[in-house]
Image (cartoon, one colour):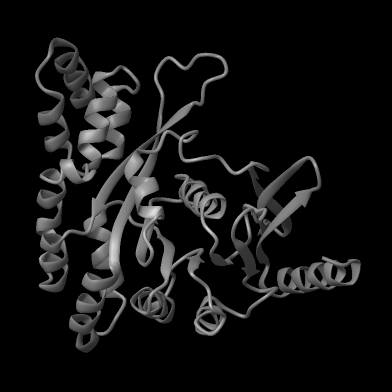
Length: 323
């Protein structure tokens, strides 16, 4: 970016902040670090929340992600969603998948972000990164244009509204590999959220389109580790994984999303796993506490069943119930 472009971008950001009293942006110090920044007003003065971003994109192996994540990133087309609450590592997971494509395949990768967080260095792929507010007016505008920019892979920073979701599904249907994020806590909830955005008369059509284009959902959360040692991360990733099989595709098409959880439970051979199974395995391995596991599940009875009735489990369960 030239000095003139940088000045213009900063001037636009300052103007937006003065008009809206809020600003979401990224900030980097060359050779030092990058930050995702949210500036807002607090009792008449400005305040800011900064999240440090790694200057190096972690690999799938370094993040400890299961092999199915790599397999999904190697698909030629379809829609892949990474979901979870704010701060659950969605951007980092997506960055590792995009960079895996970058270092292994010659593709045209187009990202649409608000703001740009990880900066990719082209290896085998050609990469264009567009920031909402600087390089494009909106996610919708960028996605409409993307279909004429000949990308092979499209990353949509956030599927926020009806138009963006519709265009992302269309891009996946027309032969592109599309990645996106939503703030949902399970695979089934993700499907419901995408369908419910649309008016009732369009929902049947969207279910059909989604059943044909969606290939996987990774719904994740970060759980505090127990007995953290010096040099170790304080949190560990728990990830529910859904791979869209013909059976799950049929459930999506017929609106039977309540049965998706059961399909994930029985899909272990295909790499699928429920969040409760992941949490139970982590608890049994001594990685997380019972309280931490219970705080992350929406199915406490299922989690307790998977943990079993061992002595340690009983002690922690009774302690949890007394609170």
